[in-house]
Image 1: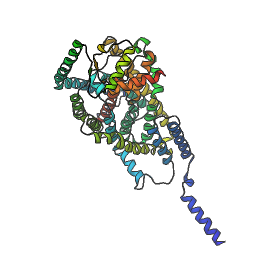
Image 2: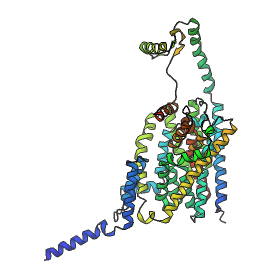
Image 3: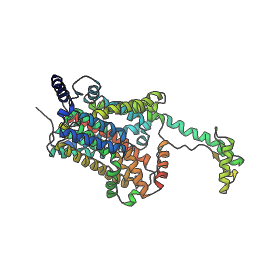
Image 4: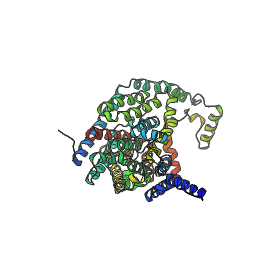
Length: 378
Length: 116
């Protein structure tokens, strides 16, 4: 009998130590959310490189009693990388190394489209404040409209760490839905004649311009907005690696190996912020709704400025490229290309749309820096 | 005294103005970089020098200017293809690789895919 009693006690101890004992309905729901996100990433191919680790992180975050974030280990290191804003600047290094600023340098007026598309950020900010979020939380929510994942995470970890999971998921989800969200807004706001406008070939940009621009803009923006110096400097350093012609190995590492490694950490860590206690709230639904408002507002503002520039330039600018100002490089530019080509099969807008697209990355970082300077934590 | 702005409309207006202001300065900066670009002048000179042999080729109407690295077989294949469309060999001015940048190439490939 004693053997059975000892066996029962041991079994009970194992049960009480296991995750099952403290497993909640909330954990189950979040694991199902993670599985759904995995399905979207793998079966539907919505941003699979980001959504797969986010989804798996979400599943891991809902294993009870693991001590992932309390005890030293790889999970805590990943959490520190997000908490202390280490990963977003490293991602920007890779983004810079992958980005061709040529279209922007050839047509610097497209910077205004990148600026106009930030309108969505501030509409969502105002909406969030009306809904009762604090100014800091609202600014982190608004940046979803910038369609720039690393900047959204950067802002959320500084301004509203409690909302990081919801903001990151909303930002990346909407980024993957760009081809579905943007075209109806673009078509609604433009006439067929405007969509058919063919743009002239861009001028060749010299090596000198491509070399000077990253250095000069890093100095200028970092002096103007020190809170985003880390993001902008790393973006421009990556671009310098790409354009210098003498740092191919560094450019290659930034674009591929380093960017992939940091993406794994950043996305998994983001997913791990999605535990049931923090995520299953009414605020999450509000953030997802506000993110959509931000995205639609940014797209609309970019297109409207595109229409104005179209008239001012004497029908030389296709307004569709304005929608690419919401960042989401290069997907938003591809959407401009696809919608423009449907209106006029001989239209090639991709290169032109890359101007506002990369301007949007800079614009979102500037918007983030401005909000950090104005209402950021002291 | 706490000067933190809490009115959402004011925050929105100030931020939008700053974003436009910074990107306007960047716009001016890009134009300035283009203005001071010392390589611009040299670039203009190069095509003129390159154009000289091309003109000579037209005057003699003997053979097209073929860029280095293009084999005789390639020249023959291009000439054959053009001949099929009624273009004589003497009408070909030059054969050189197309100077397309990667974005333009990507756009063309994308266009072809969308047409399928």
